[in-house]
Image (cartoon, rainbow, N blue to C red):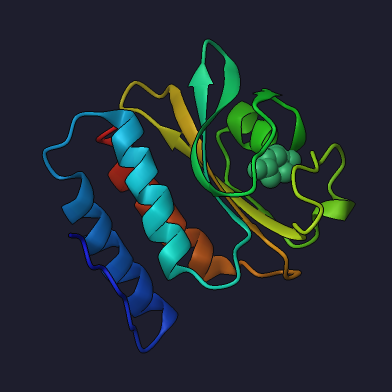
Length: 160
Ligand code: SME
């Protein structure tokens, strides 16, 4: 059994603990799907106020749904389309306070208001996947969440 209940005093400590838990979960496991599945579950269990947490994988230059927690979601997203596609095309983190104000946002779950998408890039500079977090709360993700999730993405880049 994996019991990774994280009770941190502040956000910085929470992301440190989350990173350590993720490292432990993926250590020695070469299967990318298993690692994405456990990462999505760990993030979902740890971060408050999410309505979706998961991955879209780069499959031949198209984003294809990967392991996630939350409601069933759009399966394929073109690079450049929506928030995930913008992250994939630019390789830049997308932190969106209100998705309704984001041109081309794709509504998978009408409850989503804010979104954080982190590109996960391999050592060769190629996009492997994006980590997508959605929240029903406006401006749910701040700079600390962005830095924390970028650190999680760096851990995953080594095992996907
Ligand atoms: N809203 C996303 C689509 C993916 S879902 O939120 C799971 C977007 O615009 O990229």
